[in-house]
Length: 320
Image 1 (cartoon, helix red, strand yellow):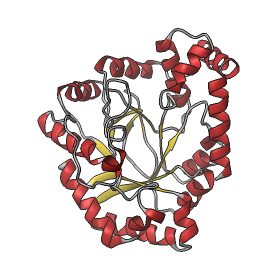
Image 2: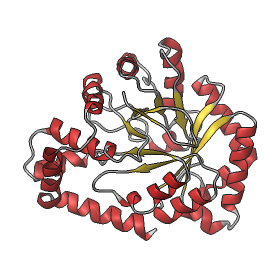
Image 3: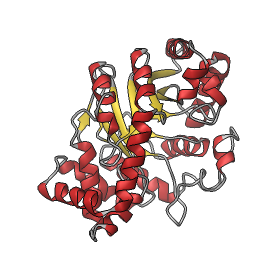
């Protein structure tokens, strides 16, 4: 494993991080695609079957390869990770990132709960119980633009809450996250309250390279990225462009992300232990090869799905 760090963190983070999603037979993530309301609004709801034998095998491979950063979202993933870590303890120190259930993104109107310490602190404490940990290393704070538009003092309140959670020892670091694009990310970074950013980053959704990644790097923040495979459409794009080697395409997509030296860690997720081991082997060569570049260029010119994806995400990222 390759490890990278950032001044605000001061610890070594594995170049690959492990996402907590588990998957249905058709490849869609569990929870969100079984009952979205329960997964995002029914605080405390635990779906059956998370953290089973297959997940333990995935965790074992992650340990074997030196992965020390784990990202979990919904309560079912938090409970499963906490239980699995007790069942098969990692052979080294790990760092966990999670989100306050029901308070991020569009799940809570104007993200009011994140700015209200009386709501935020109990949610963090509840998450700690699910994870069976004394401290959340990375509390992911995902807001939308509406929070800033609704309350001109929102970021000041949020920064104060982050400071209070740290002072009480409930969290170690805070991670800025949004799906509202460049302007919201930059506003969060400018507060100085965040220690890392967490963002979508792939060769079709590359907008963070313009200002957000440089701003985060200048502030000494960790830079965590996700969605190297564009949530799955990458392989449809490859087929449209005449690429039949899915393994080579996956490697090219992973290397595109990891070849940016600013990136601290790339989150990947799979329910297949063999796929995970194969993906983790990419650390042997993280620089893009000529073959990788040719394959990416082939998709850019030969896939209408890619062209539509890039246009949509570029407009959304810079237009927000």
